[in-house]
Length: 222
Image (cartoon, rainbow, N blue to C red; front, side):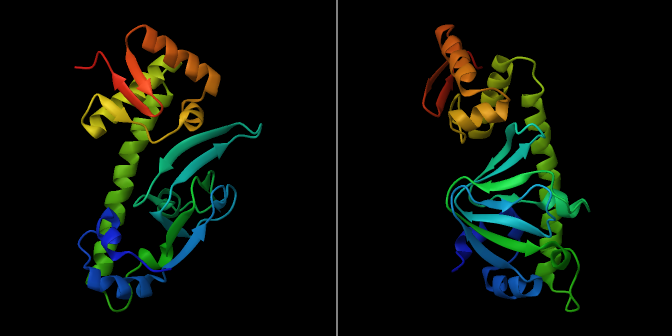
């Protein structure tokens, strides 16, 4: 698979690493690429994770299923996103979630052991990769707190308004585009699709929001 080095330059994990150093870096850490079809599992709950994954193209979802078969989407990740680092960096290699391709996706895998241990050559770009990995984990912890802020709200309306508020802050506008479709959004919020649709219609009737498919406008935001 041909790597798009322009895309890689925009991924925070490779910050400070020159495009001319990518080949040496990937050889140093034993990187590999793999293509997954829509619906195919990239990582499976209960299996061991030994690599950090980077979405080069497509979209993947982090999924949690309980013993009763209930499914919840914990995160939806597009191109340039990184996944799996929390497990391999935390020393817990057994996955408690699954990663599934939501679209046909190309994934770059970086074996953790070779990423986080300096090679005998002590390459400068390898040091930069380790520093970037630590920063990435810290940022992911912040995103986790934001997700908890949504999912711990008591009512579906509160969850939806918090979700839209966070999107408004990220996108710098009271009109936002949600990355999740209605079914996936319902899973993320811990509701079924019909309940979410009813609540959205009530919120629109009460003048709180307007929406068209995945585009939402917060009407009372300041």
